[in-house]
Image (cartoon, rainbow, N blue to C red; front, top):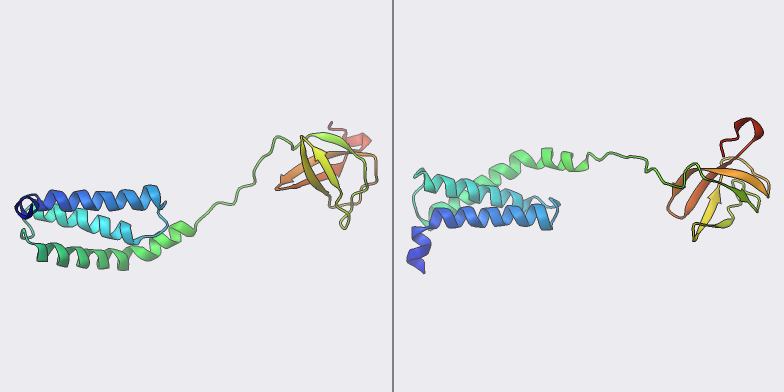
Length: 158
């Protein structure tokens, strides 16, 4: 076993590095970077051994992997962390937006009545006061909340 491992040291190190990269990206979702740095370092070390840049020894594998991991971590940590933090806040469109119904209870900034719509109990919210039994239009849907506005004669969108 030891002879086989020594004979195929470069290929084994590259395979382990690819396995670490796969675990980091697929299973952990690129949430931690240590397996990414170690996997990339092992692929680079295995390639260097295969190209006879580094000697075929366990010491060179350990030293090279540790050194390359440290260099990658030092140089790529901040850019990767910044990339992880860049998220796009996007308003989600709902199929409910634009639907109209009669609000049976008054809606105000302080009063948020429940309303059963599409089989789900929703809280109704509005930026303005709306009287009971008024036709309203859904302008935004959030988790458990429907934002509505009154439908008037001159803006009858329903």
